[in-house]
Every structure is written in structure tokens, then in C-alpha cells.
Length: 132
Image (cartoon, rainbow, N blue to C red; front, side):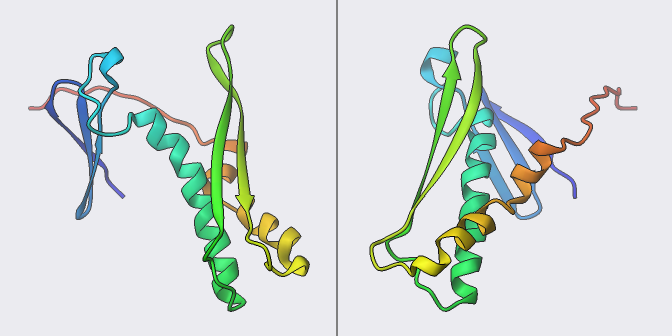
């Protein structure tokens, strides 16, 4: 897979992945135009959307409706270290959701590939080259 980056103006940075473009920007206080989520917010949202994918797959596999399921992700931020210390993904199940599947739906969400990669991160190498 290849991801190409373009710079459409001000603090905007776009990622081109095949036929898709993911737009990012910075908030006003960061000098951006606040037209899209920041790259870091996109990174954080990948955790919640990945968990959502696994919850939906679990429900689909058992013929359960996802109507009424709400997934809310919150972050605990340490102002001293200026870092997020904890991410909480809260899967709110509707009343009437089968009790016997509650632990299983939680386990399925924990299979999220993004979460797994954070637990055992891959190496990121940044290089620079000059076009010839």
C-alpha cells in the first residue's frame, strides 16, 4: 500500500490512498482553518471506528441488529506530561441486547487491529531523499 501526501493550502494535509482522499487540517488555534480533523484526531478515531467494525461484524454474524448501539470514545489527558494517558471505548448496548453476548461483543471489539498494533507497535522510519 502506498499513501501519497499533498498540501492543498494553509495547514491542510491530504492523504491519497488509492481512490480515496483523507483530508486533515489544524484547528484555528493551531493556525489552521478547522475544515477537517487534525491528523492526530484521525489517528484516535481509527481506534473507535476499528472497534465499531468488529462490533458490527460480531452482530452481523449472529443476526443481531446494530440499531441502538452507540460507541463513545473518550480520552484521559495528563496536562503535566501533555499526553493522552488512557483511551476509553464505551460500547453502549441497547436495552434488550442479549445478555449472553455482552462479554463476547466486548472481546470482539478488543480484536481491533489498530489496538493490537498499538500494543505491539511497528517501527516507523522517516527518511528524506532529493528528487533527481
